Amino acid sequence: ERFASSHKHIVREKGMKKVQEAMREEDSTVMIVSASINNWVAPFFKEIPGIEIFCTRIEVVNGALTGRFLSANCRKQEKVRRILALHPNRKAYYLTAYGDSNGDTEMLNFADEGYYKPFRK
Image (cartoon, rainbow, N blue to C red; front, side):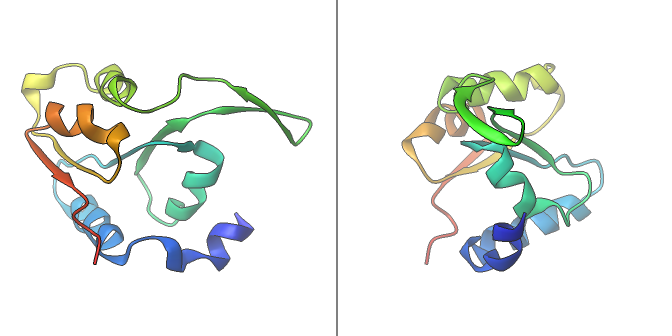
């Protein structure tokens, strides 16, 4: 959390604006689906209430990282699986996805609209 608060500049500004716009839309759900570790990603979004964050989860014992995953690595088909686990009726919603790595390909193809690296300069 200390790192996130002192390093807000590493989050792509255009991406964060898109997240905030989407959160204001009626009946929208915003999910951050990342292969990055949940403990690392979540603090960057803690000021945005209602955002859903699904990342790779790691084991922490007595405040220390063990190096073991508690979940499957959230990349490729696992991203699609996580979306469907929370929102299974795929025909009931329109999905727009944004990604910037080869681990996002399956999610981008699964979406109604998929954007690859849209927030880069």
